[in-house]
Structures are given as C-alpha cells and as structure tokens.
Image (cartoon, rainbow, N blue to C red; front, side):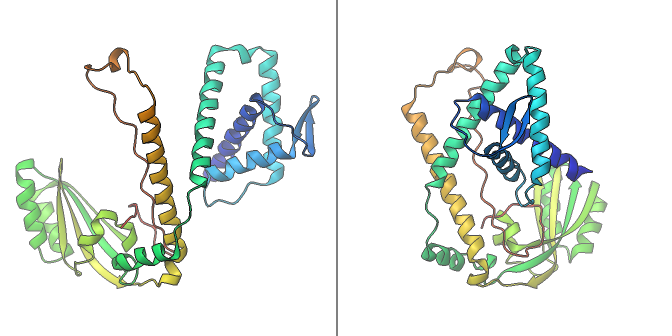
Length: 307
C-alpha cells in the first residue's frame, strides 16, 4: 500500500511539473498525440517529461508503466480544466504557488545545466582515492556493532565514558550503563566500513570487544565492536562507485563555488527583522549534503559515508 501511495504521489507531482511546463513559454511540440481531453492534446513529449520527473523523484525504482502515467495526465488535465472553469487560476494562492514553482524549476534546471558540465574524475583520481582510503577498500571490514545509549547526569558522563571504554566487552558495557544510567537502549547493527563516516578512522583501529564512548547532551553513547569480518574490495570492484562519489563531490564543489560567486556579484539587502544589527542575523543557507560512497553489495546502514 505504501509503495502504491508513493507512486501515486510521484505521478501527481510529475503531472504538476507538466502543467507548469505548459504554462511557461511553449516550445513547438511536434510529438505524437496520445490522448485528447475535451479537445486538448496530451503528447508523447509530455508523457516522457512526466515519466522523467517520477524517475528522478524515486532513485533506484523502476520507471512507472506508461499507461498509468497517461491516465495520471488525463486526470490532471480534467482537474485543470474544471479549475479554470471555476476561475481558480486567478486565485492569489494558486498564482503564488505557480510563481514559486516556476522559480524552483528555473533554479533546478540551472543547477542541472551547471553540474552537467562538470567532468568525470580521471582514472588517476579514482586510483589515488582508492589507495588513500585503505579502510574503505583494500583493508575494508564489515563491523558488527553494539550501540548503547544511556541517560546519565552531565557531571558523570565523562567518567562513565572512560569506565565504559575500559569495560571488558559488550555485555560488561551494558551491565555498567544499566547500573549507572537510566533509559538505557541497546541495539546491534552490521555496518560496512564506508557507512561509518567520521567514525571509521577510530573504529578501524579497534578489535572485537573494544568500546568507544561518546558523551552526549543527555548522557552518552557507547559503541562496542562485537565482530570484525574482513571484506576487501579491489580497485576494479570499487571503480564505478568511486567515480560516482568523486563526480558528485566535484558537482557539489562547482555548485558551491558558483553560488559564492553569484552572491559576491549580487546586491543583497536584508530588511525588517533580518536587517543588519537585528537578532538573529540571517543564517547561511543549508550546505549541500555530503556525497555518499555506496559500494556494490554493501550491507545497509544508517550512517552516511565519506572517508
């Protein structure tokens, strides 16, 4: 049921994208007409565009069936025609939403155009990355980790963290934190090296039974290595994943550089509660997410990768 609901939502969003494209300056659409709705054409180009939108919104999922997409466009066109008949296209909220969506589409396509010009990493760059991250590849391990979250008094967290790290194994850590803390939660996960992100340099030096404890605002978290399973990856096996990872990094860097340059050239004035000297000052926009390194057949993990 959830999969069907997600697909229906994606199809609906794709249909909205088609509507926005139709409301913009129209390019000559000479593709085949697939259906007419009260005399208005739905074309192959519109169907292809809507399908691309759905695929982009659902990475890794298969493309929706063409007939289903077409029915979504038909139903969308019926809704649009009724909305126009009821003069909803003049509604201030609708006009505001259309303008916001137009700006979003322009910005998104500008970013796509910019990043499409970023060259792929070279073979030397891929090899260099492979060789400089042995814990991710040539010396890669799969880790079975026990995670214990415990609520403790702030003034006891550091001392208890040291005691947890000195405890002899996973069971001892659990017993210690249950005795000294409250709201203790114990979970066990299996994670590939590349999924550990900034924890990898430390975890990769640990043996089974060793613990790293990290004080938290509400207590502490203890990670104990339960088992280490060697699972190295050759350069040939990792090449495609590294290429995509480095390419995504280059795209992100190019976008950040372009945004910085655009900001430097623009005049941006903050007014009202965001005027200079007010509190709080305008915050910087959210940073682009870190690219994720995903190797073939890696166990699922909750953490993002890097290295």
